[in-house]
Image (cartoon, rainbow over the protein chains, first blue to last red):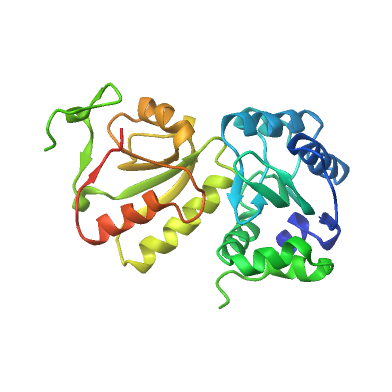
Length: 150
Length: 120
C-alpha cells in the first residue's frame, strides 16, 4: 500500500506558491510536471485541455482536478499526481482554483489519494489553509492520510 | 405515473421510473472514469453505506455504461450521452462533483423507499 502510494504522489510532486495567468497555462504547467516525472507523454496535455471544454474538472472549495479525456489515456505511461498550489487563484470556469491537482491514472493506484482528496474537500477551512500553506509536507500529509483512519 | 406535461420538449410520461426495491446498481459516470467520477462515486458509496442500503455503487466512463445500471448519476453535460447509452436506466444529472443536491436527494429517496424517476 505504502509502496504504491509513494509511487503515485511524493513530496516532490507538490509545488507551492505558483502563479498561472490562465487555466490552460496552469494545465500546461501541471502537465509538464507529469511529463517530467515520466507519467505521460506530451499529447496527454492536449487531452487535459480538451476535457475542460467538455466538463470542467473544478471540484469545489478551490480545487480543480485536471486530467485527460478517455482517448488520451493511451499517452499515460504510469499513474502520477501533481499538486500545484496557486495562492492567487486561477479562473477555472466553474470557480477559482487554488489547488490544481494534475492527474494521470491507470489502474487503481490513485484511489487512496483521491479518496483522501475527497475528504479534504469536505472541509472548507482546511481547503483554504491548503491554498496558502508554505508547508509542503503538511499538504502532502493531508493528501496521503488513510481516509478510513478517523 | 406522472401526467403528460411537456418540459423542454420532452414528454415526461416516457421517463424511466425505478422502484426503490429494484435498484441494485448505481453507476456514477464521467467522461474518462479516472478522476472526478471516482471521487463522486466514493462519496456516494459512503452515503449509501451510511444509509444502510443494499446497493452497489461503481464508477465508469459514460461511453462504457451497460444495461446493468439501474440508476446513472452523471454530470449534466454528459447526461444525454448517458441516456442514449442506457435508455432503461434512471438518469440523475448533477452539476457539482461534491455535495450535489441531486445526489443527496437520490439517497434520501432511496432511504425512504421511494421510487427514483429519471430526470430526463
